[in-house]
Image (cartoon, rainbow, N blue to C red; front, side, top):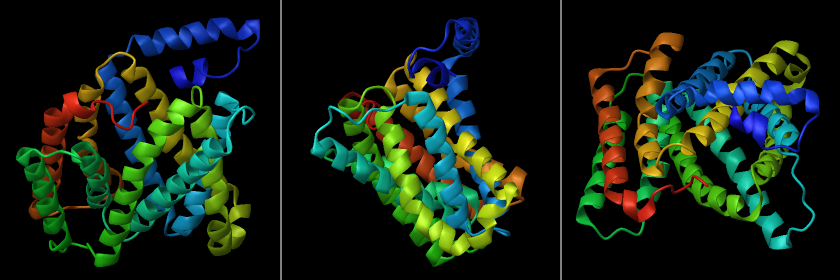
Length: 309
């Protein structure tokens, strides 16, 4: 997709035709469909990762996923560190550590609670960012609605435990930090170069725990193959689809569509993992989705495109 064919250095003349064909194929897909495909890709990747948890620890899957995503992004973006200040490099390093925390926390959460529940709680991160600094009572009401939804999840039983919710809340906090750091990275590094560097830092940060807990699993070709698939589905492909969609739609519309992610996660969990949610849990997911859409619509003019650069 566009990220994979347009952000690196110019390739040989022989790649011109495939590049034009790829751009034409992606350009023919409506931007709303690109967003939905990206959301489905992320959650299918998450379901694939969760299927591995019975054989490999979540920390090992995280390490392989980040490594695969870093390799793809570095090959595509070909980032350069020369010409950047120490402040730039320190900021992108913090960005990378945040990526490692965000991924590690959500995978630890998914290992303990249903996929749809984990993603719903994690979605509090961008929701809080959307309303931060607001003095409108309406925006505080959206936060209260989302908080009520999370309370329903935490008290709803059905395989939901406190530690799983706690890890999801940590992932939410990291996602909120990711949004601000992503915007700063986009301003200081051209294209996706900063993201490639940050993803590499995240992969290095996640490696020690992953290797310590995974051990000989890292010699298993199955783990490496599945981990690479998770990295492509959860990182490289959705980033490419979202980048192309943002070129053709307002950021506010993009944010509203992204609010569907908790519902898609719950559906993927149901179909791919057999995770049945109770009516109470579906109601809680609905609360968070409504709150996210409401906060986005209310704050669209104030903070449109937050986190997307």
